[in-house]
Length: 428
Image (cartoon, rainbow, N blue to C red):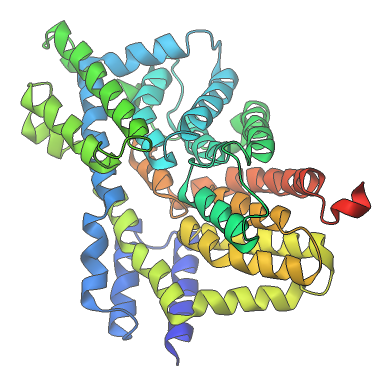
């Protein structure tokens, strides 16, 4: 077998095992890079290199700050303050989705979820709602909200670069270029969760799960709670500022400074800090990365792209756009959405130009599809981050994710050709 065939085989077997939920998830993700190594697809250094990746460091550090918010009782207090006008579960789902989406327009979805998990858990505790009912809308809002601005995710910049470079400067992408689709998608997701979320979302985790720091509130001076809030706000501000001021450290370094501060000032002990992060999330983030890299390196991802062109290339731009959207959406559930977007944006541009159509709708459709990463915990790091606090399993993402994806697909097919007509002269 060729390396590409081996990689696709490992990919399909892993996907089947994840869906069947036959083995512990942490064990399965560790087996994937081992299988690729023993089949000669990747080198040994590629198995463990992601363990020191920026996403891992960010997740671990923000988990420590989140634990400090619980330890001081501030998470629940902030949750009550932010969501005090939400009378029940449905309104909470809507507000959490919208709030995370707006934040994600300016901070990465990973950073957004890392920041908001303790606050949302606090809101769940104060309203006696199961954490899983709010954490899935949190990550969905974060990934969809990234489409509002060009800095919402790396894929946004890839689409911008494709449009501007391939058009040789004839087309430009503004800061809120994608908002015409991104905002309706985010609002539709919020309404979706408010209307049908209670029927689709799993009831996992105890309602008291968000009160993790409640026992220690009386034992800690009040200043430590406000100090922790100041650390969180300073961390968030520095993360946002890093996009505009190059002298600020990268996001994951900023998070480490915040984590060190809450331990250094006695909000958490070293033992409590080590206990704050979930190793299953670390495994998911680390050991599925080599599979996506192998798909790119061996040409397996390119073979999938070529097959898509063969299926939809002769049926007009709308059908082609739909086929590309569905293909990218499917791949992004199990591999890096940034890598998927980077692979397919140039392909979408080329196909649209071959058909004589304005390629912007197709390229942005690929971007949107790569952001609808809501069906598996592998799709984006943020999804794996909520597994432990929400008491979630692989299959818990699938039912609400499929329904939300169908809604996003329909809206994309309606909005994109309207905003960017395939044949502008004919449309006028």
